Image 1 (spheres, rainbow, N blue to C red):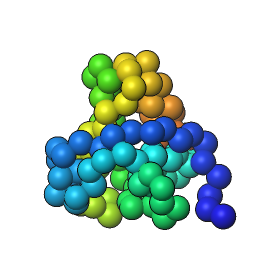
Image 2: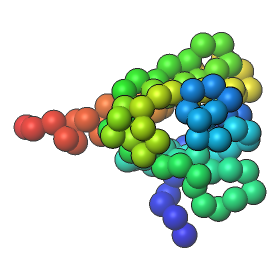
Image 3: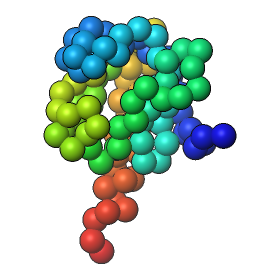
Length: 112
């Protein structure tokens, strides 16, 4: 059994940015834990890519798209992942939830 996910969203990874160069195109589950985001291909148990939250530079949404930008230290190298979701409400929810997880993470690492 893998880590307990806080959130799981079904997304369509688009052939743009890292999706194309890493050949991560199609339907995935985007799984969020307190420290990572994983792309798990539909009908698969193993994550295709696991990103550390601290490697995410920024994320955002526009209409029914959500994107994550990662830096050089990410397993994929620098670039962006673009995902299509059902609607703008889902995209906004993903954005807020992942930002919150990133903030919680940076609080943990900030020297007191």
